[in-house]
Length: 294
Image 1 (tube, rainbow, N blue to C red):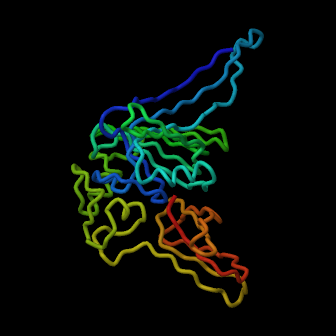
Image 2: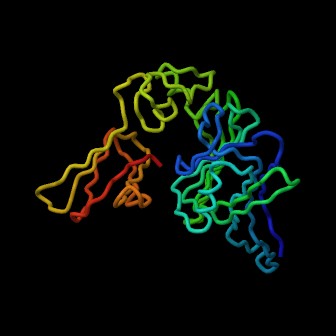
Image 3: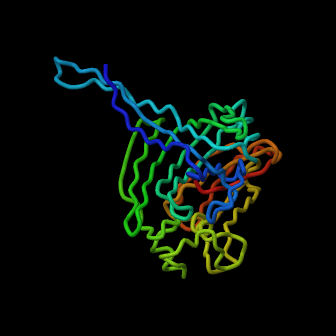
């Protein structure tokens, strides 16, 4: 039996190797531009493998499904450590986690996007008696691995464990590698050659990168992502949920009974226009709804 594998790894080094974001659910202490509040990462390991057996009669390999053991990350103990430990022993599934691996704090070389993520292990160690180190692993149902190169389109590959489907291709041109396509930046008065993702062009408290992700206008302080819930008198126990959207973008509708219990996903919706409208069966239950882009 043989195995083929793709492995990407970076050993711990002085300084920060990358930044990790649980979509704000586990705050970190990073202060680098564009990654404020993310978790600073010092080491990264990820791989995939398939078992292969040569079948002489068929003249080909019999190949198993790929095995992805997860993403293993290392860092120093910081403000995120208690919540990471809690997540490892009984935490929720996080809808989306983003890892940026950089050679330069303002230029992502690789972005790893994970979906439906759980912290599967957590450990602390001390190397020389002075630095408390931490290692934890993330398991997921889908991964998208994107490479960025200056002045060229990005390239990506993804794999969905649930469907056993993989795909790859070229992404949208993003010259300054700030997460916002050149075309969108140009049409909205932003700089194509400067990382201005963390800036706030219209001064409304929402970063330019967030305006892009939400489909709002970065030039207008009155353009916000907004969802409204309206009861339907003609259908007791139901309500209409409406929000502004971007055609082709996927949104997740979530619900929490009390804002203390973690939000749970109710459904995913792919927008077909500038507005999404969904009928929600509330059943008269008190609670809170949230819509977020996937």
